[in-house]
Image 1 (cartoon, rainbow, N blue to C red):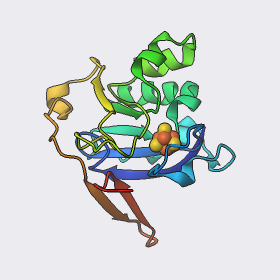
Image 2 (cartoon, helix red, strand yellow; image 1 turned 60 degrees about the horizontal axis):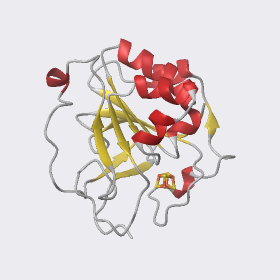
Image 3 (cartoon, rainbow, N blue to C red; image 1 turned 180 degrees about the vertical axis):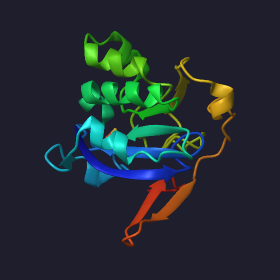
Image 4 (tube, helix red, strand yellow; image 1 turned 45 degrees about the horizontal axis):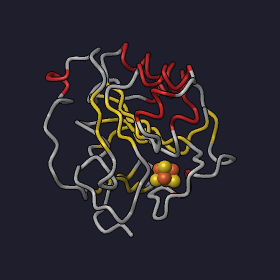
Length: 189
Ligand code: SF4
């Protein structure tokens, strides 16, 4: 798969502490997209499913978030990865610009496969003029779907009620001093 970046731990990209994998490539151009560097399909770097699994912290995370870019453009390897993640008792959260209905009605096996390994899907394109009403969403049109039943939701914290507010931002600094900014700042554009 072609990825844009990876963050071992984040608390603003879904419930609990999560690793975040940003995929490279998106065919949309939502005005105000949070991650424009992840849009070109020719950028990024190629990594294997096994490599991503090795990056996951051995403990202290509740799941992994796939963001982008558009994860469903790389649905086949992500479905494999998602299955391995869930086999470790972790949850999978996926951000997509597609609607859940579009994915379900598609005739793409890999899309259905990825959906079947997804515990939480946050769907819809980013629309900058609609303020977010959920702390895990970038704009108010995006919906949070709880899909998975293969994990202990209560135990993982995935069933916790989200706040009605958007606007959480997180800064991370790695061992080489690289700063990553992630989350959904209010008034981004
Ligand atoms: S769907 Fe997401 S990644 Fe793609 S352009 Fe829109 S906001 Fe950016």
